[in-house]
Structure formats: C-alpha cells, structure tokens
Length: 318
Length: 318
Image 1 (cartoon, each protein chain N blue to C red):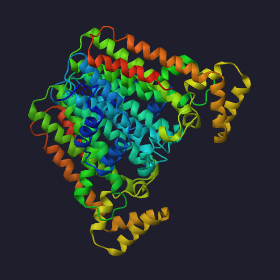
Image 2 (cartoon, rainbow over the protein chains, first blue to last red):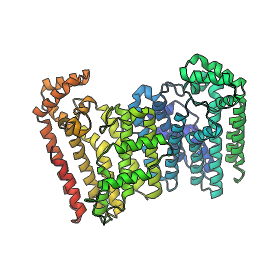
Image 3 (tube, each protein chain N blue to C red):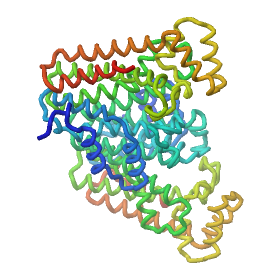
Image 4 (cartoon, rainbow over the protein chains, first blue to last red):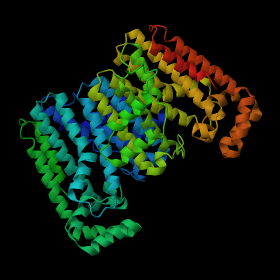
C-alpha cells in the first residue's frame, strides 16, 4: 500500500523517476545532470508539489512526473550557478563546472531546461508550461538582482525580500501551485497553496542564510560563511548592519574590499552579538506561521498536516 | 501599402519589435540582449518564418511577433556561446561575456530563454511551444557534440552533418515550420516548408564554414580562420583531410596541439589546394537545390519565389 506523500519515500521515488527518465542523447550532459542529482538535496520542491496535489484530492504518487520537473528546474539553476558563482564546493562535492568546464555546465543546464520544457509542453495543458517559464524568468531576474546587490552594506529589507521572492520563493510557489492545479484545486485552494509555497520559500531561504552562519562545514556540506565569502548580504548580516554600529559596518566593508577569509569568524560573531541571528529567527517564524495560516481554506487532511509540519520544521533547531 | 516579406523591410520591423517589446526588469539583462541585437545579423530566421507564413496565405507582417522569437532564440544561444567559446569577437563587437562577465552572460541568456517561453506559452497554441523547446534541446545537443568533436581529424561527414543539423539547421527548420503553422499550412505544406528550412540551414552553415576560410576579417566581422583557431573541424577541412595526405594531416594535428596562429594561413592554403573549398561549394549547391525542390507542393507565389531566391543566394559569390 502506498501511504501519503507525508510518509511514503517520495525522495527515492523522485530520484528513481529522474534516473530512469532523464537520458540526454549526449553522455556528458547526462553525466553532469546525474552527478548534480546524486550530490543530494532533500527534494523539498517535489514533496511540496505532491503534498499540494494530495491536499486537494489527488493520490500521493499520481503526479510524480510533474514533481520531478520541479526538482529538475532547481537542478538546472544549480548547474548554471556553478558557472555564475565559480563555487568550488556545492553540496559537498566538486561542482559540475570544475569537473566539466564552464562550457559543458552552460550547455548541460540549457539542455536540461529545454528537455523539461519539451516534456512539459507535450504533457501538461495551460497554464502549467506558462507558470514554469514565468518562474524561470523570475529566478533569473532574482539572481541578477543578487549579483548587483553583492557587498552592498546599504541593502534594505525590501530589496532583500525582492531577491528572495524571485530567486527562491518563486519556485516553491510554482511547485505548490502546479501541484494544486493537477490535483484539481478550486481557485481559492490554488491561491492558498501558492501563497503557502511562497511564504514557505521565503522562510526556507532565510533559514539557509542563518545556517550558513551557524552550522559547521560537515553537516552543511559547504563552508560556514560561504555567503560572506561570496559577498552576499544575507538577512542576519542585514539586521546586524541595521543596528547602526559604524565600527562593525567598517569591518564588513573592509572584508568585502580585501576579502580576507580570516575575518569571517569575527564577522559572524559580530552578527550574533548585534542580534542578527535572533532577528532572523523571528523573521523565519513570521513567514513560516504566515505560510501555515494560508492553509485555512483547505479541509483538514493528512497532507495538510504534513504541510503545516514542513513549515514548522523551519522554526526548529535554529 | 505593405509589400511582401520578400520586399518590405522585415529586418527593421523585427528590430523595432524586439526593441519595443523586450524589456527585462533588470537593466543589465536588457542591455546585454539589446547590445547583441544591435551588433547586427541578417535576421534570416524571422525572414524565413514570415515568408513561410506568407507562402501559405498569411499577410506579410501578420506574424512578426513569432518571427521575432526565432531571432531571439538565436540571440540567446549567441549570448551563451560567448561563455562557452570564450570568443573575444563576435559580429565585430566585443562579446557580452567580455563586457559583462560570464555570470551576467549566463543569466541574461537564461532570462531571455525564459522570457521567450513565457510569452510563447501565453500566446501560441500547441504544437508551437513544444516545437521551440524541442528545437532548443537539439541546439544544445548539437553544441555539445561540436565540443566533443573539436580537433578530431577523423571526423566524418555523417558526424559533421549531425552536428550541423542539430546546432544550426534545427532552428531554421523550426522557423519555417512555425511560420507554416501560424499561416495555416496543410500537413503537406508544413512538411515541405520544414524540409526547406532544414536543408537551407545545412547549406547556410556550410557557407558560414566556407566564408571563415575565404572572407577577410573586415567583411566577416570576425577573424578569418576563427573556426580553426577554435579547433573546429569544419567541412572544408574535413574534405581536405579526406584526401589522405598524411603530411597535411600531421600539419593540422600539430596546429591543433600547439595552437600557433601563424599556421592558419598555410592550413587554409592546404585546404584550398586539396579541393576542400571546391568540395564544400558542391555540398552547398546540393543542399540549396534540395531545399528549392522541397517547395514543389506549394503553389506558385511571390513568397515562394523569395524562398527559392534565398536558397539560390547561398550558392552565389563563394
């Protein structure tokens, strides 16, 4: 018997689906994509899509294929991110860009985007292909905004939120909305689930920002302070800078100018002592609770409880 | 009065359409795309789409928007090519990658692909969104094959043709087919026009290969021998290598290994004296004539004559 998406092993099913269905006609592309998949990840976007479909009446594994495309859009953006950021570690393995070169990373990501849209346009009616392409445009726009905001110590909360909504929350919103659509949601349910996805996505990114300052390299699979190293002004830093301490601000600006990695530990300590971590926890709680409240229009069910639990998990252990 | 796409200034109309319709919400992306558009190009893909629509009964400028997307798909691949090939000149201007950095080039190309698909999925019914995404997958697959074939002196004609059909001819075939579809073509007309586009595209790429060895830097807007410099085994070289002259083959292999640009002129002379240029001209003629013959199912008309003339132009002056 297949349980709810809340309990069955959706992660394995998604990986199995991708493993058996994604074959590019070129082994370099297939290998680049499979390697990025094999590097791990919690497959939260497909889980969200499946839970949303189930919350409005679909069977738990009825829409595995659509769910897999949500993960693959994410994977394609990660492959291109490797070119963009010159990251030398991602999820604890060498980045595709390092093993295969920028050229293959660009082409593998492009091929994967095209492959996804080729399948989606063949299998799903309007508005799903449109939602996914609009989402990809949002993600790219968000990443460009993020690039332009690097090392900007004057970044304010609304700028930060615009970047996060576009680059991260948009794909969670689309995963939830597309799951709702294929599950047969009413307009009100679809709106509610899309809103859940967006607010969950905002809280998710904020938690990611927080973990970059609080987790250790082993559990995170990437170096602590990686965002600082890439000159990203994430939300804990933004709150710490808002305190108006000019000495701290000068230290951050010096770090962004000179890039001395020895300073990362002391900047993180400065963020903590100025309340940046605590203010971030409060924001995560705010968006996670808002996500939970947005589920009000949905009938009580096991998948609905799972969605509430997913959002609750973001607030724990940080 | 608007004339036929054969005579009216479709090039300006397409440029005007793109200039007024493409605005990314980020100025860096808008600028990267506009700069690539402003760098020139003959807008052959949109012209082909418009002529095919008109050949089956549409008004000449009825499908400018669809035609513009064909050019923009090409532009997006050029933007990503700049990352891929590290080209330092393209169409006579600095490449986007050099002015904006690899990061912006990847994101600008991704944004443009997403923007095109967002619009196409909103405005065109099946099968157009599917044809365009399948075509993009083909282009990427062709570019990966081309990368793997670099410096391969054993490349044979069927390998070369597979690369060319995918990376170049597929977008001409799609332009012709989509033009035919929106123009209201019958199934036979659609097949005929798609075949025209594909064979025209093969001849077009072969002529591009030839010009890289015969034109001068000024008229081509890029250095002569650029393909050799990038270690591409193009069709004139492939035919010259087929002659079995081991001294020439050794010289080409040495060039690919050591990359001494001083040798380019003498390799081109070697290609000429071994019949590589002449054999290429014969292939261009073969595919151009095949393209022309494929128009047999279409009624006689001005746009049909323009298509025949377009293919004929590839055979002239080479």
